[in-house]
Length: 218
Ligand code: 5GP
Image (cartoon, rainbow, N blue to C red; front, side):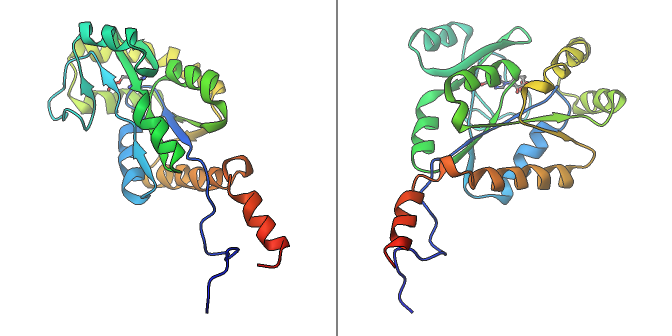
């Protein structure tokens, strides 16, 4: 059987999307991100730059690009960021170059950024943005998960807990809300959101040609 230009099994050209996951620290966002990247091969992680110190187990270039506070300021000055924000006394930012290239090639990008970064992306790239806020099942569980991580000092944990209530208040700014009762269910829900969002008409910029071919009898 020969394949025509309008073959239904041919992927239609589309622009990539930005899938943003935000949550208070400890709601399970990192585990969800890792699983999602494992099961879907058209989405890659945006590696942020940060001026905070590397935690044990974190890998340069994989978890973050770790830079000095001085170098971070230079990157701001040179307009290298799509967005950046100060979170817990440290700077975090999304380098622009890789993101723009990937979107143009139809690749999707996962962002693990806070509500401030999400607001910035909303202002500059609303059509490309799909935002998901992850809620912990309870306050107690949030506290348990933060303590279990054992990567931060007690002082740092206390600080993050006190920030949690404030971060939670930003849930209405997001397109989707997922309550993380269970890792696999949350991953499946977010994967379903991703798959549906890929089918949005405005992202499928190859549709006009596809339909034209259908009309022409191909
Ligand atoms: P952590 O220090 O635990 O890795 O991250 C602290 C917070 O910074 C998290 O809420 C995370 O989502 C946020 N964050 C990480 N990278 C970025 C970024 O590039 N931009 C913004 N706005 N927030 C970020």
